[in-house]
Image 1: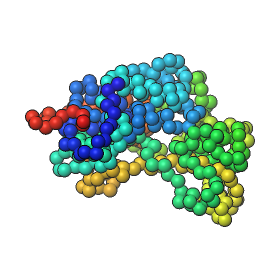
Image 2: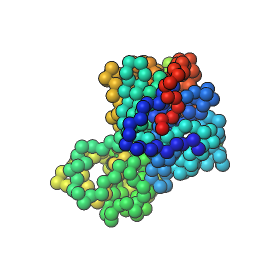
Image 3: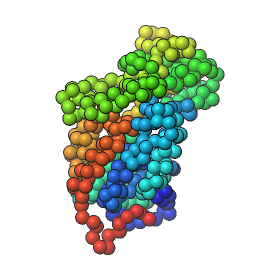
Length: 381
């Protein structure tokens, strides 16, 4: 694999000039890399993880994807094996790692971006002592960036085990005693079902909806093709129904897909109202009920965060001022793999390939001349 290990000697080297820097070597960054490699572009993919697929490997041990394997491949490489199976998170991670190797993508693992600036002509990308200048920068850092927990979490006693879903691996991390899972999204439902096998478990919150069919191979064969088509081609910013529905979708939680409320009740999970705060060391619910718990797992989502973004000229609402990933406020800045940037499926594996192909075409249309002689080109040393 063309994944040059990041090295930091302590000496600041001169910047390497490239056409495009992609920040993030997840599925969206790799999909775009595939198309840029076909165009023979001069680009680099920077990722903070020590190996490709680390974001998937870091999720809880029993996680399986909701989409069948036939929809989990990237451009040029179908997902191997049974196309109606639902891969484990490690199988998906291994696929991404193989994908980067198979297409010789210039991934730089262990390279955490510490600053992204702009000098009025080109972007300035810094990762420790390494630096690049680029005509284009693509933010492909994914959805799971900054874990979000309520402020009152700090009021719980120190002997209560607290984990965000990003850090939860399995029930062995928990102490004896009741478990409260906060948030009835898909992560919360699946984790609560798992912890109920070893601990008394409460699940706090209310789902927005449930898919009205049983998840599995039959759904993968007959129902998922319809959902995929709607998510890719109907619910988009290019259609009237999409422009009407996408803001509503953005304002609500995703429906429960595999684990439903009936499954949770059958497993003995106690479904309770939303958490409202902490009083006298106990969790308070909206209905006034108190829960003395030994463990809390916060399935409360993530915040999209770019703490290294240092471009004062960008307006505060730059994220909303984009069209199909093209940030209108600053030419050359792009988003990829983000929720609803073009379609309902833009954040999903089925959606990133289509969005990456579009973005690659736009990058080709705005291709800049190669750096002048004497300017270092390629990967930073």
